[in-house]
Amino acid sequence: QVQLVESGGGLVQAGGSLRLSCAASGSISSINVMGWYRQAPGKQRERVAAISSGGSTNYADSVKGRFTISRDNAKNTVYLQMNSLKPEDTGVYYCNSDRIRATMTIYFAVWGPGTLVTVSS
Image (cartoon, rainbow, N blue to C red; front, side, top):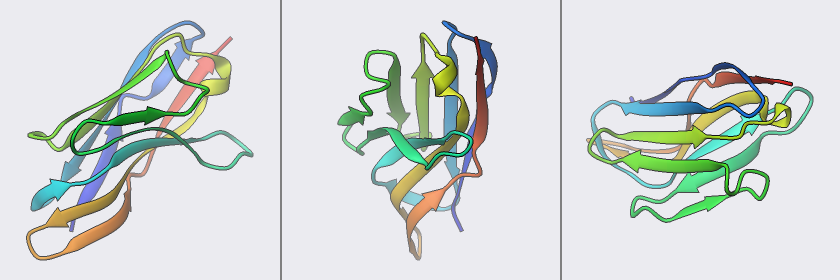
């Protein structure tokens, strides 16, 4: 069994910064793409940023230039540095991987439980 667990959410004023972390646990051999999604109240979940195992990144237009995704493959951890936060960035942020290879099994579409980010105006 593998798990993703997010941390680092909280309440911040507009213009502030937060850093989210997501650690994968279990008997992991490799992790393919890792990404961050968010879901605002009453809205659909949207992808915010993603990073491949080789380090290639892509971002939603709404966060380009403000958010930076990175990963530490040795620690099976992905980060999301969020700067210049806006009230519209408020939501539950979820960590995801499309494929995690463990000792005996491959897991697809793995999600963390989420961490709440609230940006006050």
